[in-house]
Image (cartoon, rainbow, N blue to C red; front, side, top):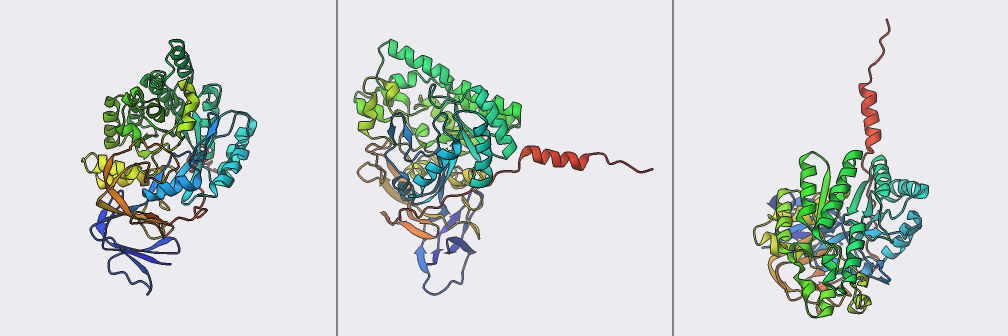
Amino acid sequence: MSVIIKGGTIVTHDNTFRGDIYCNQGLIQAVGLDLDVPAGTEVIDAGGQYVMPGGVDPHTHMQLPFMGTVACDDFFTGTSAGLAGGTTSIIDFVIPDPQERLLDAYMKWREWGKGAASDYSFHVAVTWWDDSVFEDMGTLVEKHGVNSFKHFMAYKNAIMATDEILVSSFARCLELGAIPTVHAENGELVYHLQNEMLKKGITGPEGHPHSRPPCVEGEAAHRAIKISQALNTPIYIVHVSTSDALDAISLARKQGHRVFGECLTGHLLIDDSVYLDKDWGRAAAHVMSPPFRPKEHQKALWKGLQAGNLQTIATDHCVFCAEQKEMGKDDFTQIPNGTAGVEDRMSVIWHEGVRTGKLSMNEFVAVTSTNAAKIFNLFPRKGCINVGSDADIIVWDPEGTRTISTETHHSNVDFNIFEGKTVQGIPSYTLSQGKVVWKDGELHVTKGAGRYMDRPAFPPVYETLQKIAAINEPKSVER
């Protein structure tokens, strides 16, 4: 069925204008005023509201097997929650076990993803290295639409990537036209500091931030960036939570290196005092990595967004219920890491960013949608209001309010880090593939409606350089 969104103000990453949007067959067919549309077209009245591209969350973990349990949101419940909050696409992660073929893990995650209610794609983690990893990376890029590979510098004795793996994988990414993404924490230091905490008898959630101080993140970010600089490889640093890591990114960008930085909604708002809560369950519910930081780091992250040194706001949505968190009741290192956010990201950032003047409306669209689409080669299919783009659209009510609560959110998790927060600025409509899936507080989703999104590789640097060299090669002259 066709839909026309009438009377709203269209806001994109680089423009704001009055206009209507006609959608049919899952695509935006026309943008403008006084559009001529077929009889029977559904009309959405957007008067007094903003019309924006649906959110793109480049960092989620649905149904993730992790630390002896499995995240309690699967692809259906997690993407449904996202749609309720205005996020219409996610990029999740395939995380192979050590010695597991990347291609085998990818196929397993593709099966899980078939239940998604919104469009989705995958980064693939490199957790070990041999010739099969080299081969599978090529197959994933060339045949399966993967153009990004994740590297965990933390989680020693599990999925941690050593410097040797980083060098091998970054170089392979360069050949393939893929971008490496990095979880920047020094795993050796974390492991050492965790053991030091436990030796001192610190077993509760308060030990978590002490074992992962800001310098641990800063060192890893600096090291990963320097490796990428040496190889001339672009790099994307996930969940930047400290001024230490931000400084490393900012310096590299000033030097002309292609470094992209992502921050999380939670790290922009919540500080490390949550780990001192006398209620063990509430403190443990906030355990994620990197942990929440002292307030001065939040101020730095906002400035990083304003300066353009951080380009995206994600969630790292990875949820575990109270019973799962209790696996670490006597040892904080065993608390499954993760918090929620996919449903709340857009409203929280609008409320704390746009309404306070930290971000403009156009910057809001950029950091919650367009920039991720551009970095991971989904633009202009996603993150865009343009003819031919996917009809993933939100009608945004800037005066609408919602009080965040586990009683009303759509995730399976029994805790929300923004519990009780009232936000102003909510989606009144969410359209996915041109279909209304959220309307006036009610979900209308279908399991399996989401499509896997191929993300083409960028032109391989070596191939481009060879072509340039051939063009500039001196030609022999016959005499």
